[in-house]
Amino acid sequence: MLALMQESAPEDDMPHAPGPVSRALREAPPDQLVEAADRAVRSALDASRTDVFIADYRISGLWPVLDPELPAAGFLACHTVAQRCFSSQQPVHDVDEQGRCRLYLPLTTWGERLGVLLIELPRAPDAATVQVTVDIAGDLAVALRAADRETDRYRRVRRRERLSMAAEMQWDLLPGRSVTHGAFLLAGQLEPAYTVGGDHFDWSVDGDRLTVTVLNGAGTGLASSVLTAVTVNAMRNARRSGGTLVEQAELASDTIFYQHRGSRNVPTLLLELDTGTGRARAVDAGSPHLMRLRAGVVTRIELEQQLPLGMFADTRYAAQELQVEPGDRLFVVSDGVYAATPDGAEPYGHRSMARAMRSTRLQPAAEAVGTVMRELHAYHAEADLRDDAVVVCLDWRGSAGRDGGWQR
Image 1 (cartoon, one colour):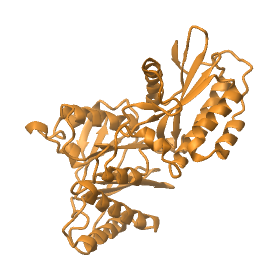
Image 2 (image 1 turned 135 degrees about the vertical axis):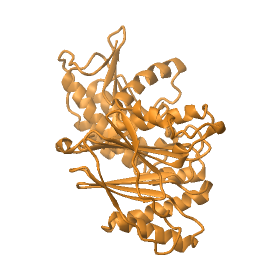
Image 3 (image 1 turned 180 degrees about the vertical axis):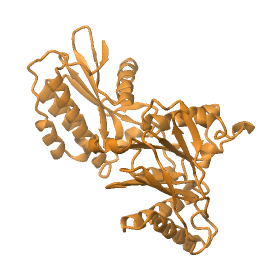
Image 4 (image 1 turned 90 degrees about the horizontal axis):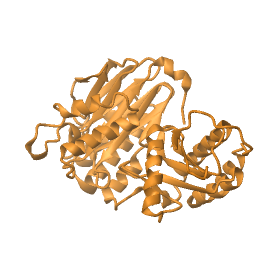
């Protein structure tokens, strides 16, 4: 039997205190978090088994940490249910013929989807125990995300092949891959995941201000990645110093120009959203393409295209105003998505991309970026992408959603 955990099971005598697990995570070395959680969960909940499944860079699969040699049949069964949990972001359980219950819980922090926690219990849990396990999964997700700065263990699980040096830099530079907030949902994805060079996205939320930047990286390989890193950090420097969207663009442009004297430039879209009102400002420096899905219709938002960052000295930029309505979904895509023309086909952005975007209207943002990327791969007949590609999806829920605050 397989089910989402929406109905409470009969009450039982399982302990309902996550304290020992939280304490074990605080005391564990960063590379031993999964083992510490395993011991604490087994003791606190009388569990017979736990495991952690981590999503790979392409978000194409979930891979076990504790039991990497899981037999193929057992892995396939666990992976199928774990994938359902990961996609729905809801606890899911199945019960075998002996009455043992395998409970799958999303490992998510601030909307960043890391993977799934498996807990095998002697019987179906009651509602209070399910809530305890949800809290445990939340604590473990926060600990795993923090541990990435101190250990390579979990990053090794995420990579299914070796990253190029450029891709290594790009993934380290990212803010994350998704964010859930009371007022908005936000997600992004890079491809080709293991060799991406210059395309990139960045974001930050500060009070009622959400800033999103998407870079259409120039060139390929390590040189492209270094140029992107300089650009992103210049914009961050201005933003963290209180600079406006225009000042962020101008500092990045000046930094690039005085490094390369106009021989290199970075087409970039800078977007700032007031999460309370939906008022947005944009600087189109070159740029990636801004698309809006509203009431089932995909429309390109035409902005005044200004010079790419770094093309000339002392370039000055102007911001444009636009209004986002509750329920609007915005996509930002790089040329590697919009202008993809495999085997002489018409550009992906002419018709096929809009169909893919419309098909996401019932999906959350984190699933929507995956759908657009999968359709892009299908458009290439599953061949390797010829150019870097980035997709960012932003849903604004409207001011009524703000009271929900941050969600984990």
